[in-house]
Length: 250
Image (cartoon, rainbow, N blue to C red; front, side, top):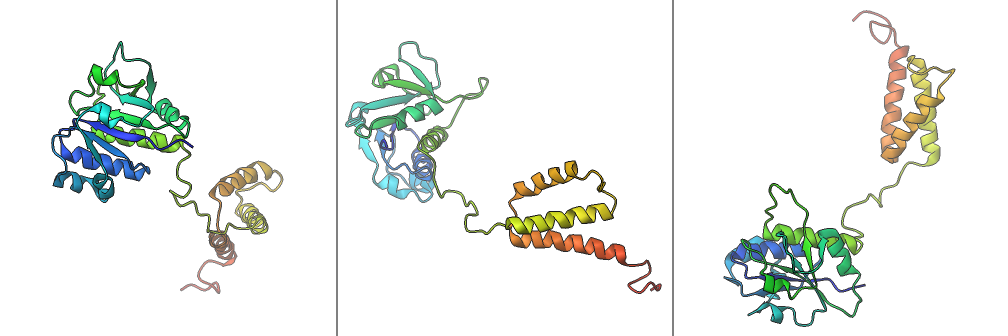
């Protein structure tokens, strides 16, 4: 698998954006941050906006110019929202991230982000193999620097296969067995017929839809027991006579 890309910020004017970038990187498993001539770094605002990603700030490398920040890299992509005519091929954020992942393991890739107000210069884009554009609303394409880094970090992580355990999947929960579900469906059909909702002569279409509905829920045993308890309560209520349990007015 290819190396995670190096994130390079060029001439960042606000230290808070550097901290927010570190936070965006860490959430997606990126750790290599290089800064080219930042206006102010290190800075308390950067640490505050990092929100726990201080280790990335501590290991960030500061350079005087972009060529120095790209030392050791074999493939470089520059992020730019403005149309350029001599800057080489342009990729979307998704295809650009896929291109990073497809690099050989022996190569290093870099994603270069420009100034908050003016982005990268043409001379800086000339140092890049490709330009990456993040698709945005054509009537309002302004994207915060850290937000742009977050988009690219996310696209890279998804292209690299995502996080296997990033979101709880319920893998430790035991699903109701097929036999338990079968008994539930029989009980459900019985109750629906008793209340006149199901035609015993033609139950298959409705029951098939109900099976699909409950199967999508991937119920646990306790959940099936709750539903069966509800069905039993419905049946019990239908057997009582009006006026109380023994039929007398209360």
